[in-house]
Image 1 (tube, rainbow, N blue to C red):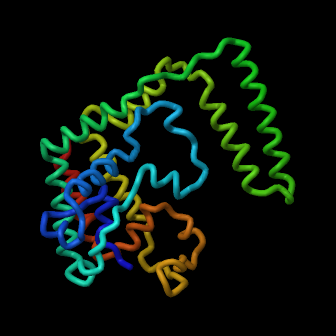
Image 2: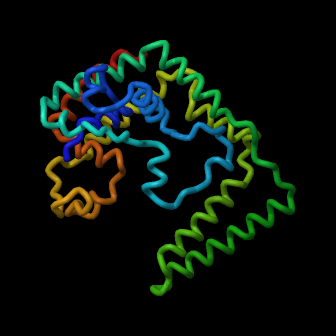
Length: 262
């Protein structure tokens, strides 16, 4: 049910000091790998080329590209104890790792591995005109499909995805768009992404309704009564599952940490 680990993961997969890692049934190397990649917001270790970043229409699959929670086989025993104390230890571990030389070295290696080794091939005038004309026609088809009550939702999504992919191929004036994207996702100074993720967590936390009601009696059939909550992101649901008391600890920690980041 409530997950201490989940809220720590919103602070970018926080796992704790050795005693807590043992209690959760996790390995330290795996814990640090999740912390690093959740802070970055990308779990792939391949070069950041267009071909490696294909559009995914499935919402959950797309979200797990940027946010994941490791399976902790002994989590239930931790939940049964002092959750607030455990949360403090988890947060402290994240900060200690992120401020360590090991984190900076791990980040540097991950950043270099993600550096793009290719850029989109340019189009000549005829190719550019053809792609633009195709986009216009497909957008008209999308409007027609939307207007028909017989059109499956999946068909509209497929057309929209195709149009989005073609628009992404159009020249932007940037001769190295992959490199530009890489530098944004992997800034040279990792403190930038740390600050970004902590702020994202606090902003998302402000939208979570901890009094939200659930239906169902088992883990596999529980759903939010309000459909809008059911459609929220994995991070939003992770905060909710962690509970208000744990989030009070985590948010206070995040605010203090932010004060230290230049």
